[in-house]
Amino acid sequence: MFIKEAYHDSLLYEESALAHYIHHLLAEKKISLDDDISKLNFDQANHQKVAEMIRNNVLGFHKIRIYSLKMNKKDFIFIFAASEQEAIQCYTKAYHHAPLNCHESSLDFQFTRGNGVISFRDMRKDFDSFPAIAGYYNKPYSWLEA
Image 1 (cartoon, rainbow, N blue to C red):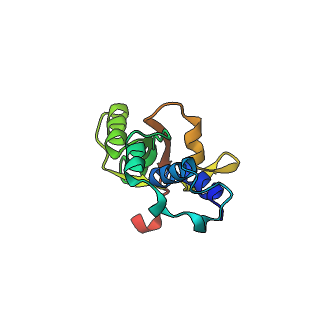
Image 2 (tube, helix red, strand yellow):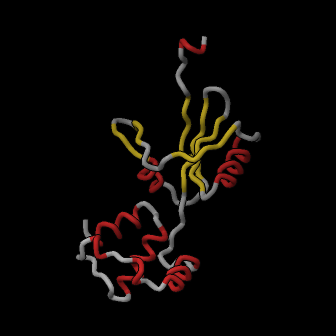
Image 3 (cartoon, helix red, strand yellow):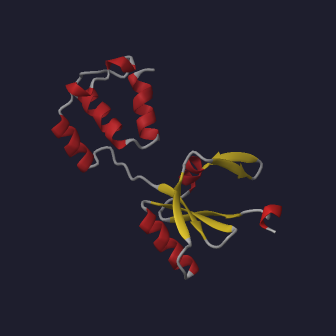
């Protein structure tokens, strides 16, 4: 793997610390995008500078996660939000009661939509503002629940 791929992945998966470290080391010319990942040495970085970059969010990360909020025994709402509290507030505003629970889900979870398959990470691109209700899920009846 090359630095270029690691940097791309850190941006794609919103790994803020890693992305800022690579960005810093590239700017300081301690590494290049075509270097092998084995050349990535965090000891070469100015940790204070990188911490400041992260604090100032130089790369513009706005991490949006996906949360599953339980309405009742069988129904769930998925909400894109920056935090669990924000997801709960969005749910409460939309449905006029608190959810039974709220859990962060994986953005990489794939499900069927129409005739294809999509992940929450890809679906998030369809939204311009957050928090946003991504969808609804009804758990099918099971004979074990009878």
